[in-house]
Length: 312
Image 1 (cartoon, rainbow, N blue to C red):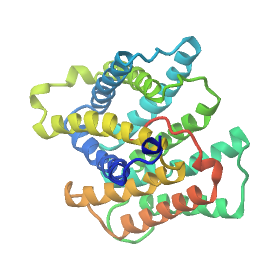
Image 2 (tube, rainbow, N blue to C red; image 1 turned 45 degrees about the vertical axis):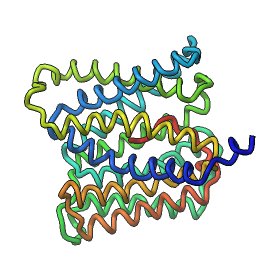
Image 3 (cartoon, rainbow, N blue to C red; image 1 turned 180 degrees about the vertical axis):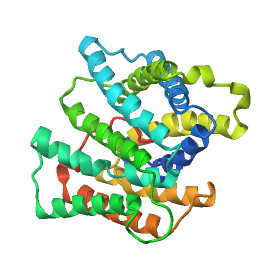
């Protein structure tokens, strides 16, 4: 019993390293992939494959499949998370560097806080929360503004808008998931969500004509490796480590990935992806991460939110 309640330190450290560094690196992997493959199709291949593997593994282990109302909840979350959030993220990374995309997606805790205030009524506006939200908005403004003279080109506005909408849809899914009836086994729930999300992304890719223009022979080995990395490490290994940590560590500690991932993504983009790291990026990143830190440490309801699947 004690071994289960208190796993070895090396296991805890390995799991944290996974959600910190693997999830942080997935933004660069997405960037590499979408520059060589159609974005919706690339996302569909990732999540459909990962969903089939995880859902199938849960069936083999004897977990029951979702029931009627649970499937409806799974479908709604799949639409918000995979088709909207990930679909927009993959699309936007054609126009926005991976590090900046990770930083802008770090605004999710801010939108969750707003959602809890407006929808769940479990949170109230306070001076500290308003200050944190304004700091996050300022960070986004620095990244996008053409009037702020900090060197470097501002972020593509259409891509940035897509990332903001993606953050809102993920946050909405996190908030409403508290009211939805979902499968009791988290791995089965996420496997089902990835499976349906992969199907939705596949339909969207076909409807938008991406399949007609896709030529597998023209895809670089680096893009194929990125896809495998996202499936094996970003989705399956990362999610397994995340769920395992939730059973052994506090949500507050596990939630620190929200402000570690963007730093890892910016560093990976700079050193491995050749992305610019100017004053604009640094200042915008600092503002947004301070906002996330304040929100996640000062607001207990946000700390206890239900996170359905790893962001990346």
